[in-house]
Image 1 (spheres, one colour):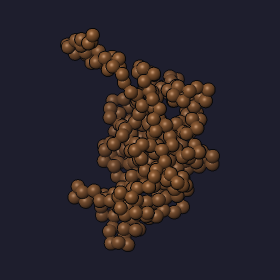
Image 2 (cartoon, one colour):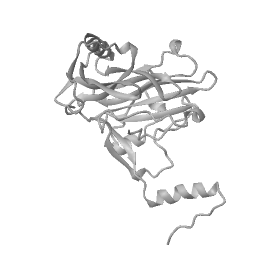
Image 3 (cartoon, rainbow, N blue to C red):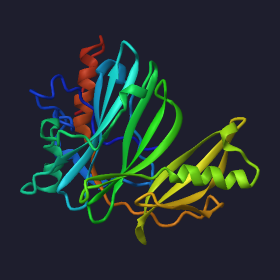
Image 4 (cartoon, rainbow, N blue to C red):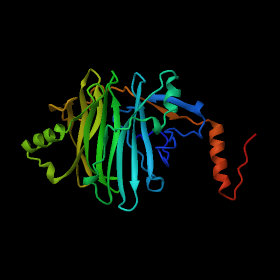
Length: 287
């Protein structure tokens, strides 16, 4: 499973102090642009250490035209032990190179109204609610993302699916998909309400980006069961099964771009020196 390429950082006061999404300590020349949604549907938020840092800025992914970037802001509130989230857009500086444009982004430049955010009235102690970008479409006007709800970071109750249309400034709920999956298996005598099950969004269908592909899985006695490969249209009007066979995955788009830090030996030595400074052992750099 792949995790975020954006390095998490803590925004002390995002209204006053810039919070850079990419780590300014690391050598900027070692960041490389890579496809975000590859392998398809593999991106998740890495929340390790969130309890200490209180806020992470994660999974920054640029649109294909490099005019905008979307990212997740994740917040931890220690008293009720609640994890909440919001999804934001940051306009990119088109005068910069693609790599420099992404590296330079700061939370102070974000659009102040999030695309979506946690409903705090329905969030209780030990619960979490996060939004993860899945991908942009080819024309850079739609953002596909998934919502996860659960408790204690890793116990996911369910995954929901949405698209935000930048042109219409409208959020589309694609969760007719969950309803159709339940209906389909009910007709086959399998009542999913009695089992743990969920969806795994993969991305836009490459041959027709008005359609989104998701896999569905059920769990029984610690065994995962495939519940089909499904299509839902980009406006949430219809959804249907395309295959009950897990190896029948169609071609999925990979449109958005993100940065990956590729360390060289200098970075490795730098990291080791920091570790040595906190220990009694002294690192000897090879000749």
